[in-house]
Each structure stands twice: as structure tokens, then as C-alpha cells.
Length: 150
Image 1 (cartoon, one colour):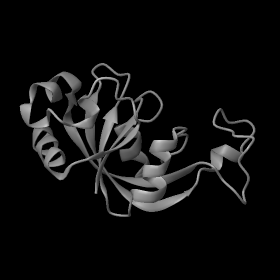
Image 2 (cartoon, rainbow, N blue to C red; image 1 turned 120 degrees about the vertical axis):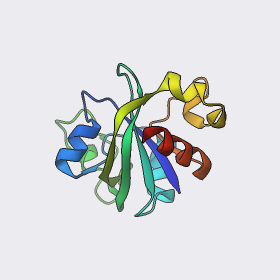
Image 3 (cartoon, helix red, strand yellow; image 1 turned 120 degrees about the horizontal axis):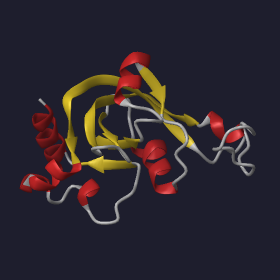
Image 4 (spheres, helix red, strand yellow; image 1 turned 90 degrees about the horizontal axis):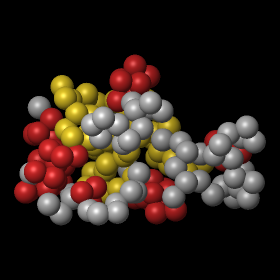
């Protein structure tokens, strides 16, 4: 499968992933996004890395799922903004996958550019009100975006 994962670049950017090589996609606190990571994402799945709340917002590059979902350690850290008092080590509530850097695009493919490409009209990230930080992407849409990034 293919995915789109959003991150605010001032929190974690494609440049940070390039430098760090891998990261756990921690801090996701939406059940649907969690379920995608926990149940559907597999090692080797390709990812569009999306910069949200940026100027411009858009797809900054490519990543790949490098480790299957594990319990998000931040849910147990009382000092973390992602702490969840209802989560226990025996019964965690939140999970995350590890992703690895693949490629940074020469330019961010802006949301406006994505909207202009009629081949992407049905892409989930372009739908009104779509705020999900982890979402599936069709093979067709993934390939169109990948070509736009070259």
C-alpha cells in the first residue's frame, strides 16, 4: 500500500528525517490514523511526506515504512504532551510505525499544484475537511505525485 503522512515542518521536517535517517511516527492521537498504522501499514510501504501548516503546505518528499507498528512510548511519559493516563504497558492505546528517509523533492509540491492536476481530483488529501495525518493513497495518485516531484 501507499500512504501520505503529515508533519508540521517546524516539528519534524523531511530535512530532519534525511538527517536522522529514521523516526518513529509518534504522537498521533486520532483513532483512524492509529488504526492505519497499527493494522494496515507494512514494512516496505511507500509514503508521501507532507508538510502541513507550512508555506507552502504540500508534499516534500518520499519515505518508507521501515518497522511495523509498536506501542507509542510517549503515551506512558507523564512529561509528554502525548501522555495518556488510560494507557498501560499491558494495554497500550496508541501505536506508531517507524519510517525511513527515501528522497527529498527539489521543491515542495504545493497543495495548490496538487489541486491543479486533474489526475489527482479524487485524492483524499484534496477533499474538503480532510485533516487526517495518516491516510492511504492509491497507486495511481502516488505515481502521479512522484512524477510531479522529479
